Length: 512
Image (cartoon, rainbow, N blue to C red):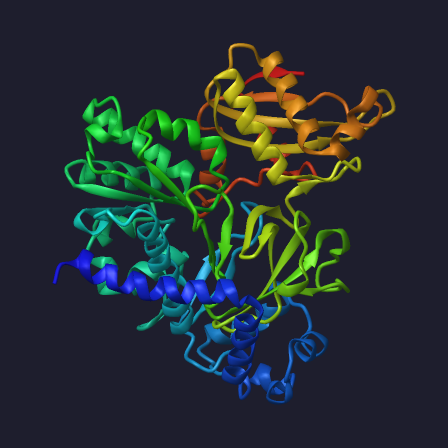
């Protein structure tokens, strides 16, 4: 039986299950919680908090504390030494290495067989199922799927236990149905040297019949441009005639959308966003007509939400179950998972756009925002403003970061933007004024603080030469698809690092 016929049958079955959790979200989440508690009841953690006697989400919330990585790291240290049955009852022998931020220490997050099969791989299958359900005439499984993973070096703890980027762990354990159509070879996909990896990826795939691209937008863009340079083609369909889908995640896609459209100038090219973190697979853009993500409720992950207005880390007093969230409020995401994370504050923030079904947008990080002057600027505001400003000025941005410029005795405060352009705007002053105006339109607190330049002045723009951010990431050994430059900062540590003597020669100009 042809693969597309097989997948058509699988898709219909899975779509029915997705419709059920969309219809009964609270019941499904309660079932997930009870199943997680039962599995972990005889672990060291489960006994400590008497999981066997927990009968409701209220019991769970009042008995089990909120956690962050610092609280969990002592269990990770023991798991790395092959102690088992600590926070989850199946063997933990894989660890996803996550940088958190480009300046923070690496985290080692447990990956269980259940989290791979029932969360990460299930998410990949569901993405294709939801896509096929909307466009049933597609034949994606006829061609190759080019997957651009992170810096995928595997580090062995013993003969069958290892750590690495999540993409490496997924690749090492990939099921046959996904491996059958994946490209490039594992030898290339597992390379950790990114310049060489991009080069070999480009040369090894230009003669493949690529139907799907998957990866972080920024690095996928680098690969695609290199492919066009090598082939001397005008657009990607001249290289890959059947290319029709880009599955992306990791960073906001809007600043890159126009650049991808220039590389693939066809209206039948589709873009689907996912929310797939080292801790779990949480959301999929299930409707091509909206950019919101469907919260995936049956992946062995139980969700809770802290209103950012009341956020105080593990000391937060207000923590809501799914049934109590409201539209258009910013929440810090809290997860309990089938890899043994419990009431874990992941560090991401989201905003619900719908509660039937539960769809959301990623708004940023709990520590990635600027509120130096009461402006409460979040990543979602910055990304939207940047995308619209680029559209209006015909500019293209590759990377950027923002930090506050604090008030002094003689000057007011401001936001300093360090931007690396792929295509400069004709007029940097106009660009800065449009950016400022878009931020005012999107954020009333920012607009109020900008009134009269009393506490917050016009944005200060610094333009960086091509490669500035890549040079920085390489210098801290974090060059690769998983590592991201923090967009917004509440301090100047990263900005000063980028502007110090090692990087100052990369700066092209100032525009105040």
